[in-house]
Image (cartoon, rainbow, N blue to C red; front, side, top):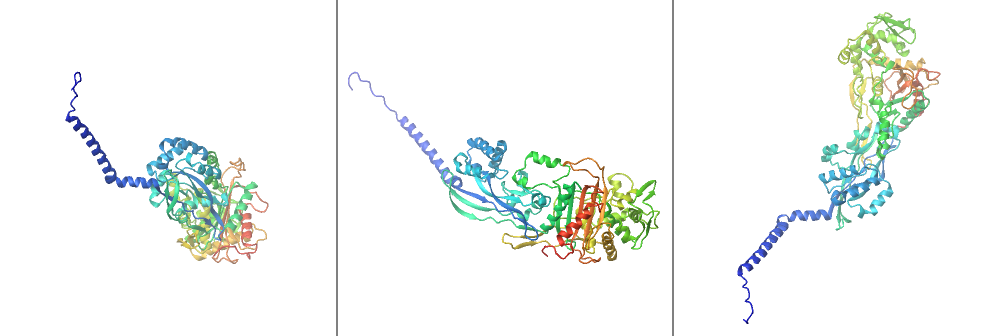
Length: 634
């Protein structure tokens, strides 16, 4: 060592040991981590990588169409576009920006879009959630497709859009579809439903969801690092829903609707209902409720203002009045009173009532008839619709020696004919109606039954309330000889190739415990209603039988939501037509026409607009002499 140089510091061995130990620890940690990633969690991360590269997407199935009995299309599908988002493909940092811009394009609130995305992230981020609530324009679909980089996770799907061919004509029957809700999805997911599904909301769309809904297919695709689709690796095709064939005859439906709409247009009445059915099997041939609503607006996306207007309309356009609302049947109910007296043995064909005045007094109250008819037997008491004749059959009167059958018997046989209970038709929202008796009044109102209640019940007033369907079904059971059928709209279900997969068979609700000769007597009396001109049908050649009914229910003044005059009466005509002009139980069509808020003086030759419309409908449908048969499938 030279003079003046400082000696080198000695590097101690423990420093080498420390550095080596650090390297060893780091290497150990890295080795453990690699072991954990590749061996312990290798399968998990391989799956994540694979999921990022591969995606299994649902392929929607077309919903089945709806046709009438002759194949006329009533509901079909048309092509459209929908927007959905796959949350895993949408970075969290861009979620709000994308949601806001998407919302402005499809007409939704950004908060709702964000919630839909967040909810789907929780459920399954790899599964798309539908964002659009109504069909989007083609130009919007093209924009989103071309600017995919600006809208990560956003998908444009071709979809089938429900189209209701004659909107308001069939909306009370068919109903409409709508998006599945969160609560519904929780219950339906096990059945294969997805958040993007549309399900039946009302009417036959709801009733026959099981047939109309198809089965999803699946498509497995491969994507690149930019999440762009490269190719389809595997595909399972969807299975279209079944096509529902109805018992409805579109031609008859349109004839009835034309008559009812014409009556409303000329202020003859404010609302109308018509139901036609085959008494031999319970098939509904037509069912019109007017005014109705256009179910297409629910598919296109109804606004709150439009929905509020429908809900506030006092004519209740959202309700199928044929099954969902109840009305006093008026004199059409005299069939029930008459059959009750005949079946109980308190009256016969030859039961005479001397209607020498148009008023009788009982317990200090006056009960009126529309005229003093003179001496009447059963057929002519029914045919002339004498109130006093049926007061006498129900509760007795000073004008006859008849022992009144009483309210309990009327209620018993009324229930047998189908009143006071749903018919069981394949439609939601059917009302039960009211078939009162003393026990009912005590329970419902807390009052004792009076003779006045019996008289009012006898002529279809007071507490009695029925649906138009109940009324025509009761008359149909008399027209066919005593079988009460469960009315139905479904004829059959077909697959996409037209093969029948399900056929609806007639269902008997009950047999009437009534004598065939008594049912024949009612059919004879109903035919006499027309032949004597009480239900005036000029130049008629068809053997129509039926019964009129008029029920006063309110004051004859004011206007409804549409500005139509409130005229104070309900008018009915319920009818059936045998094959020949006799009282045999051969009728293959029965029909009821009901007009709401109609006047007693709306035409020159009759006091009941339903009578005139009935003649026009039968003649238009069957020909003026019955030689032109209805074009219906057997």
